[in-house]
Amino acid sequence: MSTEPSTAPTRRTELLGIAAGLFAERGFKNTTVRDIAEASGILSGSLYHHFDSKESMVDEILSTFQEELFAAYDAVLASDDDARTKIDRAVRLSFEAIDQHPHEVAIFQNDAGYLGGFERFGYLAERNAQSRGVWVALLTEGVESGALRDDLDIELTYRFIRDTVWVAVKWYRPGGKHSHVEIADQYLTILLDGISTERP
Image 1 (tube, helix red, strand yellow):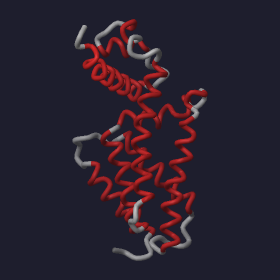
Image 2 (image 1 turned 120 degrees about the vertical axis):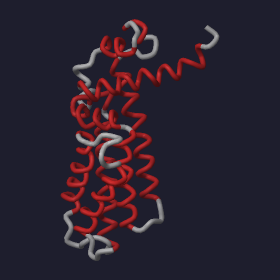
Image 3 (image 1 turned 90 degrees about the vertical axis):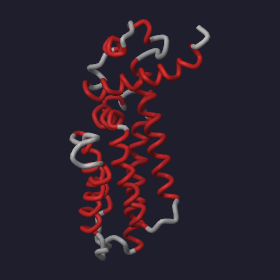
Image 4 (image 1 turned 45 degrees about the vertical axis):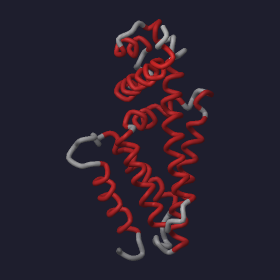
């Protein structure tokens, strides 16, 4: 019993990791508390010692991940880098997130619409709006600074980046043929050399 305080956080993190994998693979709605407990090698009742519901689990999974991701985006926005470098950094951050947090990204991509229907997850819509704000700000700065074409449709370009970057979670596999850094390199070449006023 004396070791419980030090081992409990580790076990909690382990349980969240197992749940995240199941949510990403099966979908939140199709994953039960019993599924999570069985995958964890415990009884359902034991899981309730750590979490009161699967909603609490996915809430912690998504909120923790997004806090980290948007803190990184905010650091890019606040930096003194030029506009092109900021876009480069933001794209790389996104692919790094897919590499390091594939389950969290997949859950958000697949289940944010469903979860957003519950008051508890109202922050997901706020995060969507915040994400749009990040990219619109970066692209606007790019146009105004002359780094990007002045006839660029900011909204369409934002949607293009959003959809083409995050959909990679469906096919990218860590340890595969290309690393997330190599994929980001190729993507940035296509993206920036296609819309830049000058080629580097």
